Amino acid sequence: SQQGEEDPQALSIQEGENATMNCSYKTSINNLQWYRQNSGRGLVHLILIRSNEREKHSGRLRVTLDTSKKSSSLLITASRAADTASYFCATDAGANSKLTFGKGITLSVRP
Amino acid sequence: GAGVSQSPSNKVTEKGKDVELRCDPISGHTALYWYRQSLGQGLEFLIYFQGNSAPDKSGLPSDRFSAERTGGSVSTLTIQRTQQEDSAVYLCASSLDRGTRAQYFGPGTRLLVL
Image (cartoon, rainbow over all chains, first blue to last red; front, side):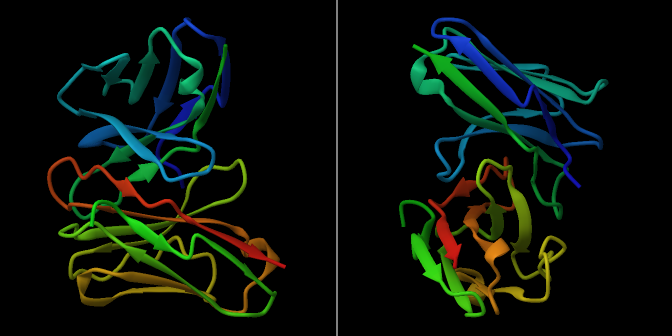
């Protein structure tokens, strides 16, 4: 079964607005990762946050992690039309376990 | 190589035929994953190879699906007696089995079963 569950399933915003996407998971993790996918191509790794971290930034991306609530959020600030894509969270429970992906969030940024 | 490569990029086959999909991971990556993605859907995990350990085959949907990884590098996913519901994009990813274990994806093979 899926470990990560993203919310909402789809999000449509205007260019320049911020986009917030959430991910919940069920078991203990080593880290949580966010990926992006354009038009059915391979996924691209965006950012990783370890279980002992609460917040991390990379450019216009900000990810938070609340291990007590088993949830993470990805914030894209000042969105651009080029940010239109599907976004997936993935949880890593550590060595000898596979990375487990959620079902993804479809983000549409209107120019 | 520079990244994960997959071949063929597109494959059209007739129902009942066998197909082989190939994945060349990033050199030195000991973990390799196969996923399936139907149109507009999320990733469906198929199989996971990690080093010399026995592969995790828990995601293979039926015994028509099999995969092998020779020499700890190239992997082949084989689908026997293809069915129309096998039509999807098949994605391969590789990673180190230590550190962040971030996955690097290939461009996928788009399979269409007529």
